[in-house]
Length: 540
Image (cartoon, rainbow, N blue to C red; front, side):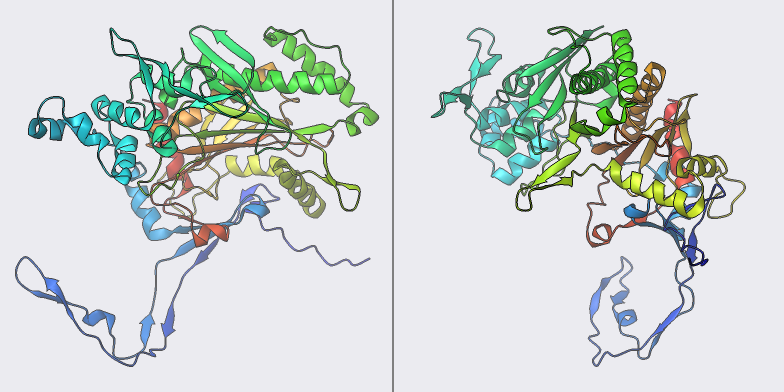
C-alpha cells in the first residue's frame, strides 16, 4: 500500500476546527493589440467641460500594479463550489452595516394618478385597457386595491354579491372529463395579482385561498389551533416522483409575509410535515396503524418516532424500507417580470412542501434498481470522505470552526461571530462561504441527522429557528427566499451527518448567470458583518 498522504478535500473546514481561505492580490500587464483609436466626445459636465473617452484608448500596454484583492473560500461542502469576496466592496459594507439591506418596495398607485385626469370611476377601465406587460408590472408592484381589483376582474370572471358587490366565487367551466376549472383568460396576470398582498382578502379567497379553487387535490390533514388554520394538500401528479404534500395556510388564516407568521403557524406547518412522515414510515415498517380522521398529538408523535427508531435497529427492516429519505422545502415570495418571466417558483401565500424519497428507482432497460437521488446523499458522501481522509467528524469540525471563527480581513475591532441565534439544541449561523449572498444555515448541535432522530425538544427548537431566520431575512428586505433541507437516509447508522437547513434569499441584482452556473459565488460583504446585520434585526 502507498503511504502517500491523501490530497486535501476542497472545503474551508480544516480538521483542526478552523476555517481556511485564500487571498488573490492581482497585478498584471496586458499587451495592447488594438489598431485604431475611436476617440469621441461623450458629453459635458454641468460646468461645460468636455467628457471624452480618451482613457479607453491607451497608447501602449496596460499595467495594473495592484487591482482589488479578492478572497477565495471554498464552500464547507465540496459539491457546492467556491465563494469570492471582493475586499473593496466588503470593507465598505463593514464600515457601514446599513448597506446590507434591500429597500422595501415603495407605495405605488396608478389610480391616484389617473383618477383626477380621467374622472371619477374611470381608472378601472383605463387599467383594464393597458398593454399586457404594463398590467403584469402593475399587478406585481401596485399597493392600491383600486388598481388590483380591475386587474383581477380582467383575467377571470367573478360571481359578485348583488347587494355588496363583493366576490362570492369564480365562474367555472366544465372540461371534457366532467371536471371543472376557473375561467381564467390570463394565467400569469391571475397569479401575479392574486399573490399581491394588497389585493383585498375577499378577492384572494375567491381566487386562490378557498379549498379546492386551485384544483382537485385532496386535503389529507389539517391544523387548527389558536387562530392558526392550515390544510395539507396531496399533490398526486407531482414534479416529485411518488407525489408530495403542500401545507398551505387556509382561507381563514391569511398570511402573505413572514412577519405575519406566529409561532403557532410555524408549529402547525412543521407538525403536518412530521406527522405525515412518521405515519407513513410507521406504516411501511408494519407498526401499529395510526388512527384516521384526526390529528396525531405531539405526545403520540414522539411515541411513534421512538417506535420507528426501535424498528430501524433491525437491519433487515431498515434495508427493506421503500422510502428512506425526506424532502422538505419552502419557496417564499412571488414575482413576475413584465416580460412574463417568473422570478420565483412559488406563490406568496405561505406554504411548505414535503415528500418521502424512495431508496431506489427502476432501470427499465437493464432490469435493475438504481439509487434514487436525495440532496442529503451528497452530504453523506462528503462527510464519509472527510472522515476517511482526516479521521475527524466533519460536523464537529464545522461547529468548532464556527465557534473559533476569525475575520478574513484580520480586523480585531470588528465582530467575528457568525452565529445569529442559538439555544441548547440548534445553531442558526452565517456560513463562512455563502452561496446566496445572504445565505443562512441551521443545524442541530448534536447527532441528529433527520427528523426521525429529532426528539420533541429538538423539533421545537428547529421550528423556532426556522421562523427566526425567515423573519430576520425579510426584515432586511429579502422578498424571495428558498429554504431546503439536507437530511440523512433513515437506514444510515453513522452519526457524522447532521440535519441541515439552508436559507437562500434571491437578491435583486443577483439573478444567477454564468458565474453561478460554474458554482462561483460572488459576494460583497464579510460573513461576520452579515451575521451582525441579522442580529440587529433580532433586537427590533
